[in-house]
Length: 95
Length: 95
Length: 95
Length: 95
Image 1 (cartoon, chains in turn red, purple, blue, brown):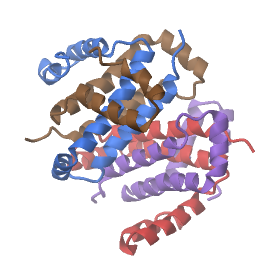
Image 2: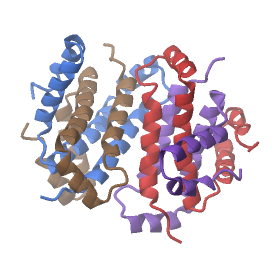
Image 3: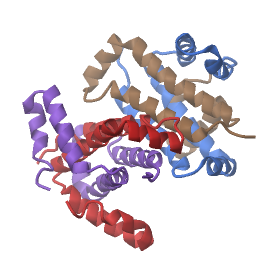
Image 4: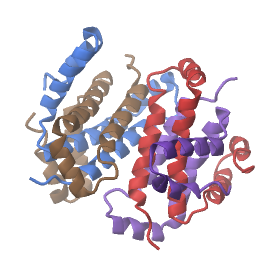
């Protein structure tokens, strides 16, 4: 099996992550909150862009991303206190 | 509603994206492929780390990430030829 | 003239930039300040790592980085108020 | 002494690094070379932007960046073969 250029996809992921971060650049916590409320759709699209590349990369590598997340979460829970990791657990196991 | 520090989460996302990219640094396409085959679990964990932060951020902002991806994909399909975007479509609509 | 793989060098720059940022991850302004005071040499090395790659890339592309900075600063001063850009001016023109 | 928000400056550095990388995204080595030749000034400005933030951050932290680079280079030379590090040595010691 040949992969569809995972290095370039990883580059795309970091560039999209930078575009998301750019929205919050030089803003205080309060300014970030106000900004997100006023620019909800744009932020949503930036997050979706990262996710689209991430799922595409996972798919190209034959990785089931949701299972990979559950497995990684299990590892994290062994390393960190249950309470900290717990909040995360409800996020995607309903998918 | 108050968000749980989205700026710091966006910072975490880009740091995790950098850790993924680091695995492929200075490697040719062939070297990347071999490397992935020999380090599948590690790569899987790196991708899962990005996804975990991404889902957590989306959750904190009250964004349904899967719907956001579908909406963004719809926008992309209007901007780009159907063929290019098509490959992506099968990735997560089975979730 | 052939360049020595500027794409891989740009990848190295962003990875080093991420390593610097990682030191400040999840820290408040006060925590960052204390952290820097207590880890001065490490921070210094991280900044130096980015600079080393940046100068090497510039050198590979036949760019005189100091002149490029002066030129870019001139452009910025046209775009932004003198006061904002002024602080920057003293930084490297003593080199 | 108080630092001028080094965390936000580190965020700016990674965002600028991403903008540089974006120019090379999805391009082969040959395409990158041609692209740089045809867009020299733009690339130069991107590299200068990273350098401007880097020097400003160093200045804010009371770090002499050129000395820091020399010191880091010395450390690298101990860790890696002389030949690899040597190429780097001529880059900025003429400043």
